[in-house]
Image 1: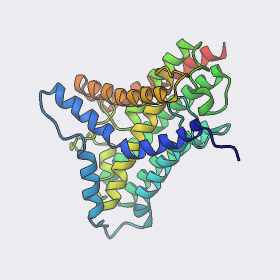
Image 2: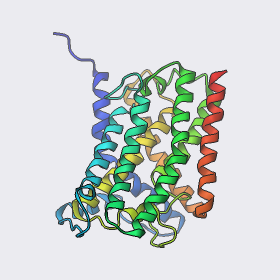
Image 3: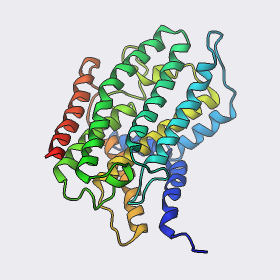
Image 4: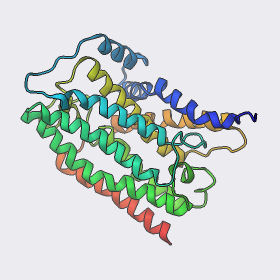
Amino acid sequence: MTAMPFTSFMPFLHVATALVLAPLLPSIITRVKAIFAGRRGAPLLQPYYDIAKLLRKSAVYGDTTTWLFRMGPTVGLAAVLTALLLVPFGGSPAVLAFRGDIIVFAYVLALARAATIVAALDTGSSFEGMGASRESAFSAIMEPALILGLVAVMRKAGGGSLSTFLHPHRVETAAATTTLVIGALFVVYLAENARIPVDDPATHLELTMVHEVMVLDHSGPDLAFIHYAAALKLWVLGALIVGLAVPQPAASPWAAYALALAGIAGVAAVTGIVESTMARLRMAAVPSLLFAGSALAGVALILGLR
C-alpha cells in the first residue's frame, strides 16, 4: 500500500489552521488601529473571549421572527466554511478543487450575504430593512469585481479552477493582470467584510450602519456564529489576495505555508492601516469605489484576452 504524500495533507492543514487562527485577523486590525491612535488596544485573544462568552449565553428571539431568522447565522457560517474548502493556500490546492469552482465560490459567498439579509428582513424592523437594502445594493455592484477578477487570472493562467490559477508558476508572467486583480480583490475584501471606507463595524450611527444594523437582533450562539463567520470571511478573501501577491517557493512546502500565513496577517495589517488613515466614505460615494474595483477587474480581463 502506497503512503499518501505529505503535500496531500497541506489542504487539510490549511482548513484546520483557518478554523483556529481566523479570529486573530480582526484582532490584528484592531491592534494596528490602536497603535496608530496611540493606544494599547484590546488583547489579541479578545475575539476568542467574546465568542466563548456568547456561546455560553442563550439566544433571545422576538415574537415576530420565524425559522428564517434562526437559520440565518447557521446558513451564513456554513456557506463561509464551504468557501474555505474551495480556496487554495500556500501553493497547495484546495480541499475541494474542480473545474468551475470559481462559480461555486462566488455564489456560496452570495448565499452567506443572502442569509443575513433574509434574517434581517424577517425581524419586520424597518431599521434592519434599511441595512438589508444597502447590503443588497452594494453586493450587486461588488460581485462583478470578484467574478471578473477571478476570471481574468483564470484566463491568463489557462486553468479552470481556483487551485489551478492561483498556483504560483501559472501567473508569474501576467504581472499587469495580477496587479489589477489584486487591487480589485482588495476592494472586494473591504466591502465584503464591512470595513472602512465602505462600512464601519464599530459604528452605532443609525444613518451610516449597513452590516451591523442587520445583526442587531441576534444574540447568544447566533451572534457568535456571525462573528466567527466574519473572521473566516476575512481569512478566505485574504487567502485569494495572498495567493496572487505573495511568491510561493516551490522547493519547500513549509516555507510556502509560512509565507502565506505571514501574507494573511499582512493583509489584515494593511486593512488596519487603511482604516487608520482614511475616513469612511459618504454613503453616496461607496458605489463609486465598488465600480472602480469592477473597472480594475474589467481592464485585467481585457489584458488577459490579449
